[in-house]
Length: 78
Image (tube, rainbow, N blue to C red):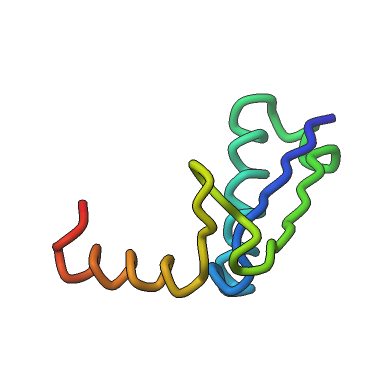
């Protein structure tokens, strides 16, 4: 049975977005393996506190995520 673990910064995604991810990932497995796998797809969603996620040694905060989203929305970040 497949186990998918999703981790993201707390507050980066709404509950509705998390639910959509779970649904869409499950549907991807069903498309690939057929309907019989649906009940065996295990998905966990874990939220990591802002600042406790780092890349390249630099902590990532929810404020940075929101800043990047605003930049993308304004077209200044690709």
